[in-house]
View (cartoon, rainbow, N blue to C red):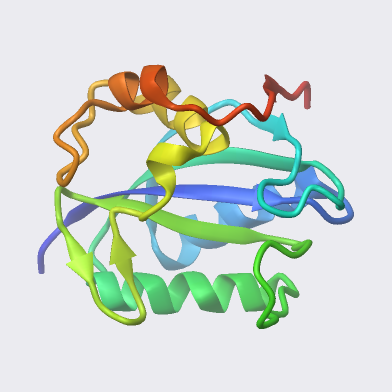
Length: 164
């Protein structure tokens, strides 16, 4: 069975945000793979729809034996276990949101899964925690390091470390 390295973005902007992030990490360790690195937790105004509470976000690096499709399926189950309900509208409040940023240096472009995450290079709330744990990681499509993508990002939302 192939072992993969994946980077996941965790986010929450409802209720006990810190608890939802911690619970997501525990479920990921139980059901997906070992967390080998974790960023600090950052607070950011909501992106896309700013008329909602601020998000807490962090990035984790995991080692998993799951295929990309099974990884996505398991992450969706974890979100559901935590009480997330999906709506057709984009950028709504959520108890938990788990995005796959990278899986190895794979490029996946299916209807259900796009890796690398197509918007990660446009979002400071993703790049800042990702750079904290993997600044030299190279984006397999853009051929730039996370550090370089961060320096080129035009997103103006303030991202600040959150004291837990």
